Image 1 (cartoon, rainbow, N blue to C red):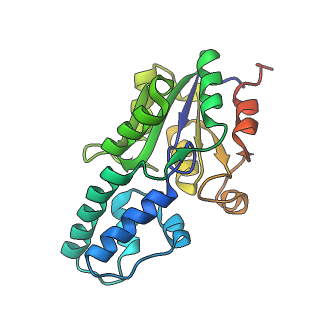
Image 2 (cartoon, rainbow, N blue to C red):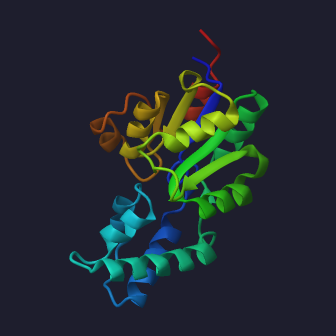
Length: 219
C-alpha cells in the first residue's frame, strides 16, 4: 500500500553514526579509567538509548554512581563531537526528497537523547524531517510506542496509514506495539539474518529499494 507517513529510526537507518558513538563511548570509558570497546562491540550495544549503551559498555559490576558519571562524560563528549564522522547513508537524501515531493509525511523517532536527535535532524535534513523526537524523561523510549504516537499526532496521520522504518529488533517491536506497518533495513547496525530472526517481514537492502517500496503506486 501507499502510506501517508513514514516514521524513521535515526542511527543505522538514516545516519551512519557508529564511529562517533564509539568515539564518545571510548572517551567516556577512558576518562573513567575503564577499558575501551571495539567498533563491533559498540555496534552490538546500541539501540536501547544511551543509558543502556553505557551500561553495556562499562565493566560488569560497575557501581551505579560510577556508571552515571560515565554516562555524563559520554553525553558531554557526544554533543560536541557527534558530527565528526557522522553522515547520511548514500541515497538517503534523495529518498527523503522523493517522499516530500510525493506528499508523504516524514518523522524521526529515536532512542538517542532528544537534544541530539533534534540537532542532527536539523543539521543533516533540514525541512525534509519536520518532526524529530528522541528519548526524554517524560516519555517511554522504544519499543514502547509513545514516541511513535506523538509523531503521528504531530503529522495528523493514523497508525494504520503509517510505516515504521528501522534497522533493529527494537524497531520491529516498536512498530508492532504502535500498530504500524514495518520495513526493516539491512544497511545499518544489524544484518538481514539478525532481522529475520527477530521477526522482520520486509527488508530493504538499499535506500533505492526502500524508495521503491514506499513510493509504489496503490494497487
